[in-house]
Image (cartoon, rainbow, N blue to C red):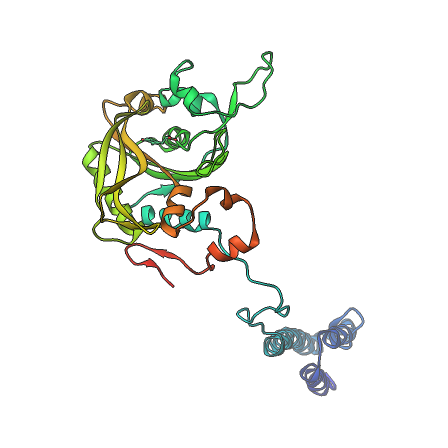
Amino acid sequence: MDGLNELKSRILAAIDAAADESTLEELRVSAIGKKGEVSLKMRELGKMTPEERQVAGPALNALKDEINSALVAKKTALADAALDARLATEWLDVTLPGRNAARPAGSVHPISQVTEEISAIFADMGFAVAEGPQIETDWYNFDALNIPPHHPARQEFDTFYMHRDDSEDRPPHVLRTHTSPVQIRAMEKTGAPIRVIAPGRVYRSDYDQTHTPMFHQIEGLAIGKDISMANLKWTLEEFCRAFFEVDDVELRFRASHFPFTEPSAEVDLRCSWDNGQLKVGEGDDWMEILGSGMVHPHVLRSAGVDPDEYQGFAFGIGIDRLAMLKYGIPDLRAFFDSDLRWLRHYGFGALDMPTLHGGLSK
Ligand code: DAH
């Protein structure tokens, strides 16, 4: 067929020289579009003798294929080049300080910091984090934890009750008074064995230098076939050693009573106060830091765990109190005043991450 070679080299050269995608598209239309040069030549096939057609047909098809491949290759090359050009000019250094240098960096609230520290220490001991709602039914907050309706412990909690009409067809709700109901929810969800901590907000109607109506606790729960009080003691000692960054911590287990544990123990930490500065592991003072015990069989049963097969320990730690002790913060109420000067003074940088035994990795 006349001029086929000339046509081919002209079109391929044009494709090669194309500077952008729209030029490529124009070339495609003018070469192999409906009225393109190659397509018009294909129409001529009908007027040829069979012999001529046998030569010209395959040659035209091959040309069309070649043009197609050249178009695709050029398109890819153009896209690559465009990306390279963008990468060369549009890179972004995310570590640069912001343009508005006047905007001060924020800080991590001591409660968040201490929650992170405690969670990291227990995570290293294999505890997962569990959560539950802050508006809780009185069943999860009390009954399931072996605190029946007229139990005196209900009064001790200074509970906030959610408003409820007696005619309403839903259970009474409270602002949870402790993180212990998360024990029940966690066991219901995954059964035993289980090892979780549950940090979160809790509420009681109380307000003075060491009490605020909202505060924070971390619940701990470890249930297995043969988990004992000895495991509880080791776990809490290990925790205190890591949290207070002191090797020689000494704990005292004092017999106590909680409806949800049997036996129950409150745990005191040996310490001294030197000019208002706390020293852990030395001195003649004992400071109460948490409540704990072996989970009561009624509690396991409420959560669908067989107490003849499983047993374990639980504990509840006041986060705010530990933060006050560790970082020398005298008044609990200041935690929640949102005073920027206070936050700047007591806050933490975003990268002050806790490590087990090593304290803060500054
Ligand atoms: N829920 C208790 C409180 O708020 C703290 C507590 C004591 C939790 C003993 C426990 C525990 O899990 O075993 O005062």
